[in-house]
Length: 206
Ligand SMILES: CCCCCCCCCC(=O)SCCNC(=O)CCNC(=O)[C@H](O)C(C)(C)COP(=O)(O)OP(=O)(O)OC[C@H]1O[C@@H](n2cnc3c(N)ncnc32)[C@H](O)[C@@H]1OP(=O)(O)O
Image (cartoon, rainbow, N blue to C red; front, side):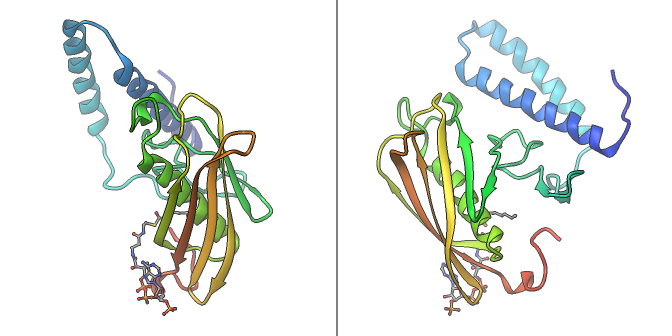
């Protein structure tokens, strides 16, 4: 057992726990072990859950500033390294284009052998929102429109991109897509993001 040295080392340990939990969720989705083993593992997991609940927060980790000076959100459901539900998506900005490589997993199945449409929507919602924020127009998703062109495979590296297109007052628009590495689009999205009045003059999460 290692000692807790700094807040950053604790966050790193939290992210490792989240990654181990993702591995566990993948294993749960795919396991073929016998019933007695399923029951035994379930009992062990129940005990582990209680250990983690011994000290608990009411909400996931909030926005903070990482040691490299960037805004991060480790509790976020899409990009949060400390959130086991997150892929986690690693978003890079190239000018005003948000880009992320993404490989969905069997856990994300909707139709047989394909990714659930809501999972694709979640990724695009986030990416469009991040493109709008990078352009200086952070906001809540008001309307997200999706066009599912081809089934989205899991287990295959894909590329998700988004760009801010225009703004008008508190509203901004962004477009995006999930595509094969050769550029073949699988899902396209357009979104309207509205900056709530409560956010005026400050950044979300602050
Ligand atoms: C670094 C950070 C990166 C962050 C990326 C995060 C991406 C992920 C974002 C999300 O998932 S956010 C969660 C999902 N969205 C929500 O929960 C939003 C819930 N809805 C609300 O909070 C409010 O309805 C909303 C902020 C969208 C609008 O409330 P307001 O009271 O500010 O709207 P208002 O009625 O004053 O209208 C302002 C303008 O926006 C327009 N509008 C309002 N709601 C709209 C809507 N739903 N869709 C499109 N436009 C909308 C409205 O017509 C109007 O246009 P005009 O100025 O031209 O008149």
